[in-house]
Amino acid sequence: MERIKTCDWWTAWRKDVIWYCNTCDRCQKANKATGKSFCLIINIQEPSTPWDMVHMDWVTALPPGGDKGHNACLVIVDRYRKNPIFLPFHKDDTAILIWNRVISHTGLFKNIISDGATKFTSALWKTLHKLLGTKLSFSASYHPKTDGLEERIINTLEDMIRRFCAYGLELKYSAGFINDWCTLIPELELAYKNSVHASTGKTLSMLEKGWSPKIPGDTFKKDLVDINPYSSIFKLFLDKLRHNTNQSMTDSFEYTKQEWDESHKTPELKVGDLILVSTLNLNNIKGPKRFNYYFPRPFIIKVPHGTNAVQVELSGELERKYPNLPLSIVKHYTSSDKELFPLRNETPLEVPPLYPSEEKKVLKVSKERILGGESKIEYLVRYRNPQHEGR
Image (tube, rainbow, N blue to C red; front, side, top):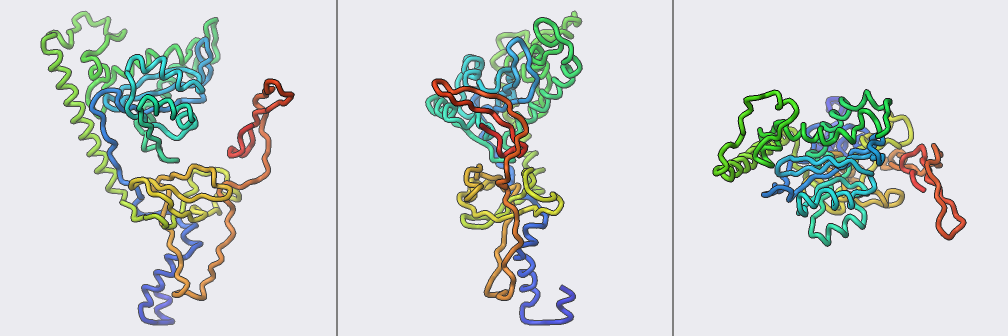
């Protein structure tokens, strides 16, 4: 700005220079997003009774456990009381697992919050819950804050499994591993439910039953006092607990929202605007990562979803990608004014596509199958490029 001031001058020159720099195509794609991020915290409608709204996710890539070789653990969290259920099972049996092991104890859910994994977006899953009257809510891509409740519990579960199971996986006996994670899940769940939750200040067992179950360490306490000796005031006791729980959840959200919103802002975007999408979560872009654009190409906003997510217009090789994106990974793109800068070179550098259609390189053949009634063999192939995995 100072260099231009010494060599030239015209009316509104400072405004034009700033606008020229802000509309530079190459700079907008190469510069990191600075300043306050988009996406203010929006409160999810809190449930009024237990098991009305649940968060759901899988812990996968676990070693085979138990006599049935379970390789995953389904985590279901009651949003009202933060009460979790840990269910070891096979990762392909979600619907049957929930129906046989959960619904019989909790009843039907009104709302299920999960990510956009194929297990939760399949036609069977959607049709089943449509018939049951359950609403399915999905988080946007690369936006774990939406379903952060079960993500935090999953981290705790993984920490517990790692501490109690990691050192015994090589030692086997007739029924499985000595430190088999499947056999320890009930004890780990009991220990978690007997710990005090930060948002309510109570144990999960206290909120659910009104008393805390005894654990092995309690058997050494001969003078253990009954936590609720008067059955006549038991209902009043539970009512006060639920009232305090609701108040604690409200206070916890207000505190979190205040801390979060100080470093974030509300976006001013509308249908038809151009936005740039960050490559932070993309791992298959050609060329040296240090030299690639942080925001390679602009997209058109097709449909806004509230104030924290948008649906973009995808075409060509990106047409089948999930179009809903959180605003935390985008920034506004400003187009250049051809009338104001007629001599500006509008031909940007050629940028490789986000998902390049390069030649597939086979990593390994995992499985094979013969189609019934046909002399045709299909192979499950894993490619080096994760976008090309399939049959």
